[in-house]
Length: 392
Image (cartoon, rainbow, N blue to C red):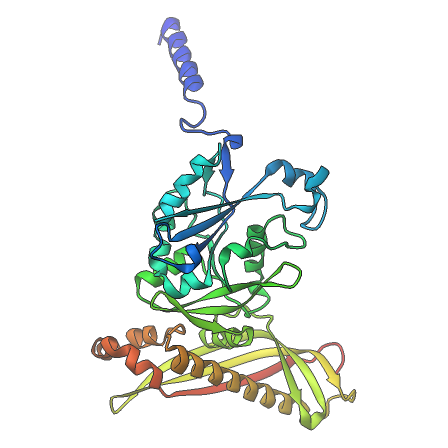
């Protein structure tokens, strides 16, 4: 290549670098409203026959307030903004969610951007009366949607939850997103992403979704779970029932605490789970289906209250047996509620039969809703305490 052609090539490369730098569809951050969370409800006092039956409340950060606050949800700010959350809530209604969200163009000079959304919260009445698969359809189709969005249920209207005032988080959506990470410490609620919920809905499976409720002082609590049966909310599980349900599925991440009263020792102990293994097996005998649940738990004594005496020989065995009986009782209670009251297979018994006995499943899957409530279930729990702490 001669010198002239070399200069020409360098010039063309430099020109291309200049004119193609950046994104062709780039929008300045200041021209976007970043949606952190969305709360969806039935509008018009729950009348789905209304002209605009759906309501959505969007939470977006006001960036200058976010910077000015510097700290948590209880203080900071500038001027008269110190007692307000550094967020903007926009409530919209529409015949569909797409129409409602599109109306934001009439109320905000900024373009809504859903690429940073953390939370999708559904109201109780909507979950009981609406088809959740249809409710989620807009998020499933939107190219900005983040499939790792956490999906939760509100006790009462979801829009009211957005009025909460977390102590440290700078927005309700950020609080709920951070709270979902606490599943590594407790199984008193569940964590499901948009992708997981959509997959369950598409497969016609029942599922548990975390419950959010307002507590005194405009604080928020994430505990318990909503039972979703055939795409609708059938009812609630308490935090303890949610915990027992996750013992069965083996989804607990450990660190659970179970309080075990032992009257024979005049003591009450806190047992911390270190490892939990669950096995759910379908059994077929003479064309009669039943299930066996076997759970093995390894844990340690985190606390002992009551009689201060040290453990004697055999005491630890008493504690293990008492803890196993309590777990069996709680598991049977939640099984009864799920099978008889809600008739919702959120524990995946049907999927177990399909996997292990596909031929029998083909014959019974059409009547599974009628078969499931009467299934006999045997529960066996073994608790092994490996450590007793610094004192024994």
